[in-house]
Length: 118
Image (cartoon, rainbow, N blue to C red):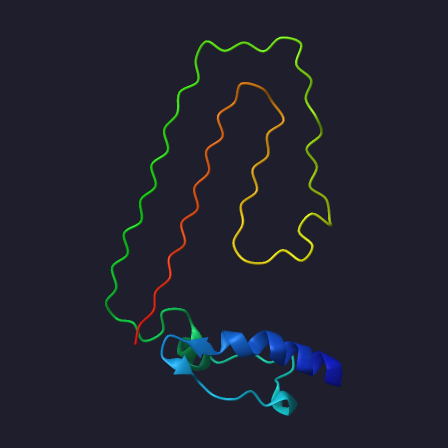
């Protein structure tokens, strides 16, 4: 059980950092049981954008493409497989695009919004 408490704290500690700063140390011996409800007032202190009253975010992504008058004759397509090991040790931000056909347009857009306040 001690291992699970330590693992939980390693996962939970980064979540306790909010826009207003670190809210306190985690006592691994005082972790509530999984069947205990968390008070709404406690959750309000650690949620995203906690303490930010006025914020404007404008995000825009335009993707436009045209595919016309194409032909595909005697083409051979390969396999496109994502299995349980495809994302092993993956970290950061990544995008997966799959294509098993011919004469296709693939559009991908990734928008990452990071808000840092003093």
